[in-house]
Amino acid sequence: MKPQVICIPGSVAPAAQRYAALTTAVGHKADLHLKELEVYSGSVPPANYSIEMELAGLDRLADSLGLEHFHLVGYSGGGFVSLAYAATRPHRLVSLGLFEPAGIPGSRTEIEQTANRALEAQLRGLDGPDFMSAFVRLGLKPGVQPPPAPTSIPPEMRNRPAGISAMIRAFDAYPLDRALFMACTFPVYAGYGDLSDDYQLVKMQVLAGLFGDIHVQRYPGIHHFVSPDQIYTAAHAGELMGLWQRADEALAMQLAQQ
Image 1 (cartoon, rainbow, N blue to C red):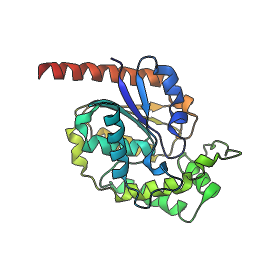
Image 2: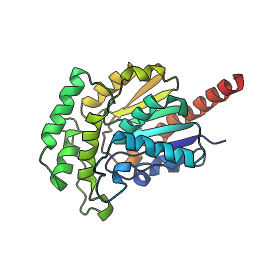
Image 3: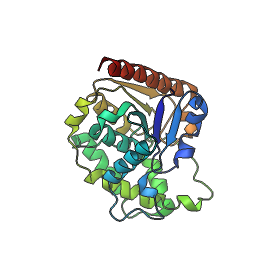
Image 4: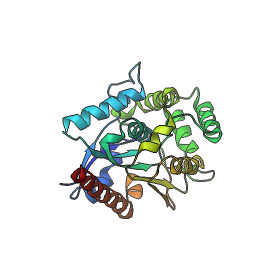
């Protein structure tokens, strides 16, 4: 049976766009099930939006697919959701693949708190193109040229600034004991780009201390907002494919021994 993988995008590009390159690279070897964020389930974010909504949406999708166990891949905001799911439902995951999660659930270290306060302060009061421009700029190392702003925004993506703001608030409001990560026995793969802001490296260092089986990969010349084909290259796709195959084999052995 092919690896069964649920992929969650970040708060900007929809899942089909975010994971197009990965689907092309491994779609013949794995079944990728793309999951949109619940924050975009309507024209505006739900008034009571929370991370719990995202976790429940993931449960619904997995249940509808008949997946008792599955691999989970998350990028940016989807990475935060994936980490929350991993901590609260570790029995369902075979592996976890991350690229630059927007944050790590649970009580932040001092350096995480400082970075998060700075982000919120610089985005406060902004909207529309001004918000998106600042959001992108803050995710890059100083001096790194941001990608050009789109000449037009599709109607279905005009709710992105509101969705991003709602997710940032939900991240802050989501309570989690980070000790839960210690019970995660599945393998984790986490990638980040060396042109992204320094906070990405901090998060990788924090993650390395939370999971017992984790491999962190630094990608040169890459940042958070490059095109998906620059992130999910053949090499990156190969790393994920290897992760899924090894994890599936380990799960099969574990189930056979029960």
